Figure 1 (spheres, rainbow, N blue to C red):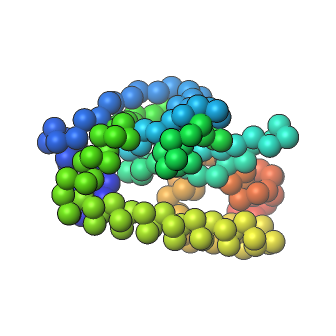
Figure 2 (cartoon, rainbow, N blue to C red):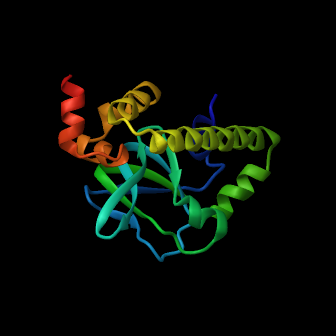
Length: 178
């Protein structure tokens, strides 16, 4: 059983308090300069995490069904985030406060091990993302992400995937047609 399944089971059993959120397309969970330390579990819908530099949006991560996400910078250091978190489509989330989440993780060795495995997976994902960002070829960037996360292309509109891949939507469309 993976970490998300463990957490969802414990929420369903009443062992971890979570707030259910029903959000419309375009709703913001947080914006830059806010301390935002909740963790989220996506039950349905999709979310993007992005930042804005010189009026250009840069998508850095997605959350979609059966995924876990947070404004990691704020979650880890309790300082204001640099990121926006916005729904891409209507979404149903479970939100857990940081203190509740961490107390829960510390309450059981099984939870600690599952959380450690999740952290290791996030680090490996970040390392793969760094390679993606350093890869000059848009075709190879697309191939790498498609092989690693095929569900992404089923859950997320192409314009956001294009931003994530550092290319225009038109370039992504040409690559997908070839």
